[in-house]
Image 1 (cartoon, one colour):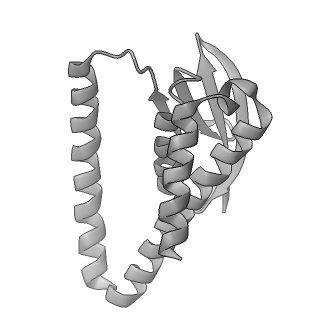
Image 2: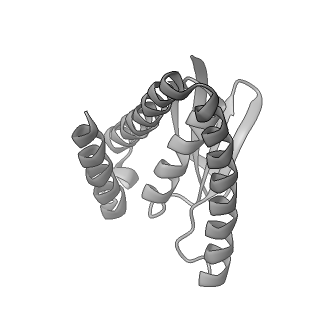
Length: 148
């Protein structure tokens, strides 16, 4: 497990920090992606670091023009499809083992996202009062616990 830090940004300043562990950069990035959208009312950016190494950066501004959002979604979808193709090829090679690992990875991603969202709601008033964060947390928790 690798140690990561999530920095929640507003107007170029860190407004909150959360530390967590994940099995890989990819899992940390996917968990952060889920959290970034949920926190868009309380911050305008999210950065993920492992030590001195930057892992990912997310913009969370809800006022971003629709076209820019569409381009961002398209880019993420394209990247996700490329990742899915890689995962599918690996799944063919390691069928049962890979399916178990993928399921555990998705559970880990959701679990990490839930932990981060709970922690920031508990630690910081601006996140605690965010209806968007509460809705995302409820949705993610429902999905995560339904899968168990």
